Length: 258
Image (cartoon, rainbow, N blue to C red; front, side):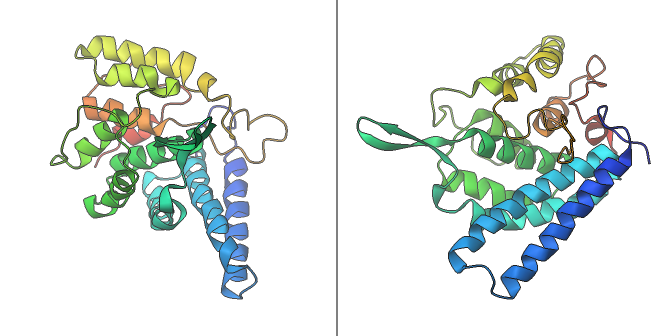
């Protein structure tokens, strides 16, 4: 098996990580089944399961496994979302002079996760019925985000287009991706994506929990992949030849045969 990751080129690293995640998952599932976890703590454990499935998908792709092997992990993550994303718990909150304000946008980690799920849902050709689960959560939370909607519209063509976003301060991490989405000149859009992948995507994620996870012993490193960027490239029909080999660009997901 040939790894897709440039930082850890021995697939054993990812195989061992997947094994540790799955062992921990099985153990925790047993705790729940045996009543060892208090009922009010189960949802927090399931949030961990959700992120474990995302990490496993990352690791499967990094290690060089067939793309189809990612689908069961995606499905399991999807099944957890209605519960772990319940009641607007992922929406951005801030204490102000007027009290706690809840905004119609997701905080950074949740935003990254929803984009990964949207991007992978499109790239893995998940059924529209399953994909609708994510859309229902976004709609329930009253989030109107044009990057999300570009992927949703590609998957669900009947989706009604809105003109105004629900939060008027766009996430700076995705500013260039947004620019590429709305750039009508494909050659310009391709150059924007190239710059974004080379100079911004990883660097602007310095506050993310996974940033620099490859350093030290690197045991928790599953790979750095911008699935949402790959989805946008495929949706817009861009020529990715100038950034195809970028270390954060999951090219095999774009060029696989459906």
